[in-house]
Amino acid sequence: MTVATVSCDRDAVTTGPPALGNPPASPTSADQDGGEWVAACVVLVDADVQSATSGYGTQITVVRHTAEEGSTDSNGRVSTCRFELAGRNGGQTLTAGGVEFRIEERGADLYFPPRRGEEEAAGLGDGAFWPVRQPPALLVRMGARLYVVQGTVPLIGDRSPAETEEVVREVFLKLARTVLGRV
Image (tube, rainbow, N blue to C red; front, top):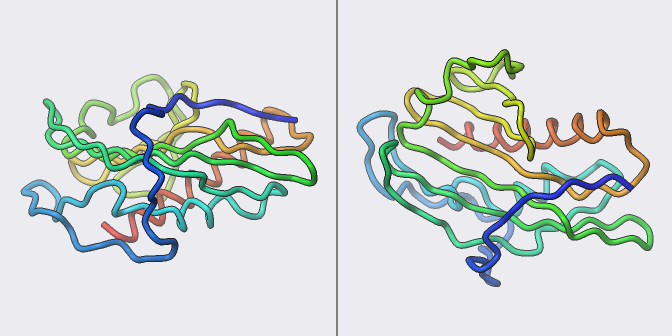
């Protein structure tokens, strides 16, 4: 069994996720540096996460997700949404997993260009890379805006760490493409 964990603010979890399959709502406010500002939980919904994690031998479900957490700091507006995941395969169930999606209004300049030899992820936004850290993450730049997908996927089965990392990267790429198609 292969498993990795992600830390989540479980006190902020709500039990009422938005309806599966609903398209994102209209943007919430205008932004001067990159179009309309949309909250993280509006851009990425349960159905997107469920779809991106399917097909890897473990039935993944979104158990619940946090309400959108918004704040303002030196990077402008920041919006975060966390999705708790559970995996099932045969008679086994694994609940240690989750994906966090964050948008930072002006956070891209802090991380781009990559400075520590991180591997680039081609074809996403104005640039993207895989930082060297745990939990795994994908950082994408669109203008001044930063989009971050990080966390783990509860995969059950006999996978090597390299195979697990490959699946997690595929899932994060799917999620990033979904987000970029909506912003």
